[in-house]
Each structure stands twice: as structure tokens, then as C-alpha cells.
Image (tube, rainbow, N blue to C red; front, side, top):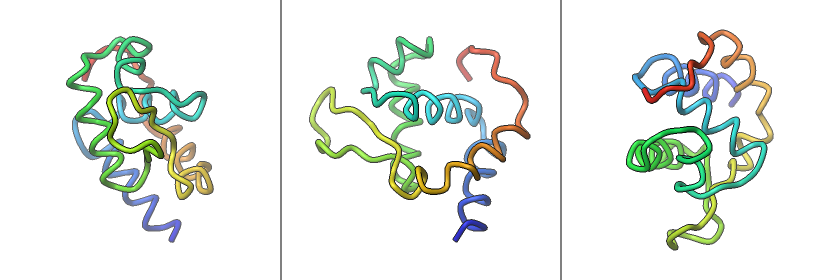
Length: 103
């Protein structure tokens, strides 16, 4: 299972445009659950950009919303990602440093 997660993370973080922002979102949510608006403000990204990345991460099983799709419901890391977070850290270390801008 860890090989599949490693491949997924390489694709989502290094193989596609916006990967560094997705990594920043994962790191921010690990520190504290947030909703899309809070993430946008904290990371300095447009709300629509954040929503796109959140949707992609959720669709791939890396995030969850226990409160459902209610407006302002916070996002959390999925149990799967939490249990395998060291794989994310391994992939993240090999990515270029984040510049903090929108991607």
C-alpha cells in the first residue's frame, strides 16, 4: 500500500502543476484543521484555487470532511494519510522549496 501512496503523492505533488500548493495545504491541515477560506487566507491563495486543490486531494483519499459538504466545514487529513505521513514527508523533502506564491 505504501508504494501506491508514494506514487500518488509523486503525481499530485511533483508531476502536476500546483503540487507545491497541495503540499502546503497538507502541511497546514496537519498542523490544524481548517476550512477553504481559512486555508486561502493562511496560505495567501485565491479561494477558487484552494477549492480546486482541496477537491483533488479529497477525491484521491488524502483529505476528509467529517461534517460533510456544509459551508465552512473544516478539512482534515484522512486516516490513511495520517498513518503514512512519513511517506508524504519523504516526497516533500525531495520537492523544491515552496516560494509561498500561488501556483
